[in-house]
Length: 266
Ligand SMILES: [Zn+2]
Image (tube, rainbow, N blue to C red; front, side):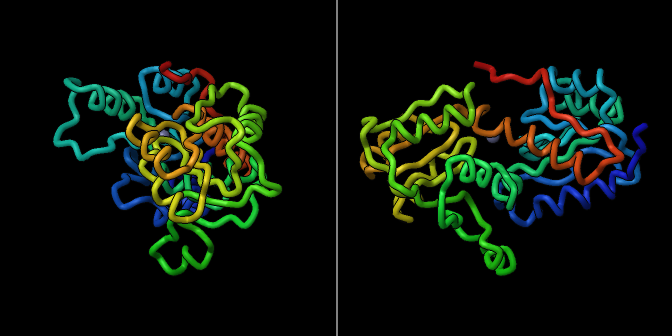
């Protein structure tokens, strides 16, 4: 039998997992819809709030969706059925489903997505690409992205093979030839292509992200940093599955599960 917990308590746990101060300044994180006084018995995690994931939350009687990508993301001046965002928010509120996003705070958390990648690829001497400007977080070796040494040094095709072993569903693409040696790898999950120059400054010769633009890939070529792309969904979705597991351990009274219907749009 599952009990219920106050949303307030669940939020305390979520903030222990990923302090919101870790989020980028442009981000929109925390409780985005809902009432902290409500009770929660079922929590679903997913990457993006869409008609598919909202319907799944309704069908599975979730009271809270912990969504990676914030909704709303940019400020909105109305919540009406005239926009996709408005429609989704209206239906969530009518169904008494609260929405919480950790986004870049979860990307960069101690057990977060970038660190899960770094652990899967066996990176040593891990440190953030950009240390947090907040002294307490900086002291904890937290910040934006992660970098670490590849020891012993591998070539690009070895790294690609390790990525495929970790995430068999990812279709991995990269700049540079397969024999390019990689001694230090930077990682920013999601759309991290703009961080390749920072990775180069930190001495990385490889950079793993979900997706990058054509021009960011040209920049990586010019910098001599191999850009390795797994696809946006593949670079992050596993992190929402692991988050559901972490939540299950910390909130044993609540049923926590990851979406099973969400898929890449490609
Ligand atoms: Zn993303």
